[in-house]
Length: 161
DNA sequence: GCCAACGTTGGC
DNA sequence: GCCAACGTTGGC
Image 1: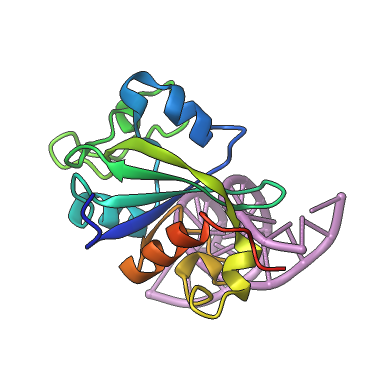
Image 2 (image 1 turned 180 degrees about the vertical axis):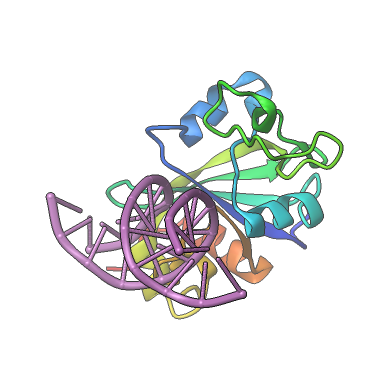
């Protein structure tokens, strides 16, 4: 997998977990429902097939990175924005210039162990990751490729006490 | 369950 | 266009 560009997506496992992704057909799912402009910008204008994606579980005990995935499609309009029965319905989104985009995400592998948010915050070389910033509510964020490599490496080893 | 951050809504 | 109220996110 190319490691030039890396991202992180957050999901509450009670809604959609990394195991759910592994169990999906082709271990792939459309990452729909993103309704934040910054996240939209990343999906539409930055993320491309093959980019690495860290899969982060939020609102868990503990929260942390549990899996490696990849972008598995070009960005395309999120069809749920046009569905009046969907919670992500956006009445004002023009059909010819849709507001919201998605990309397919494919599971690569579960990490040998969770790398917790707490561990990231404590790690001298990971503590600057965007996900470690207080009150960061973005559901899609950039990851420094060096941070990606280090975090994957760390997941192969026991956590520091 | 609390609460800080922050995006959205709506009255004016 | 301002800004208060409200809703959501997500760690703790």
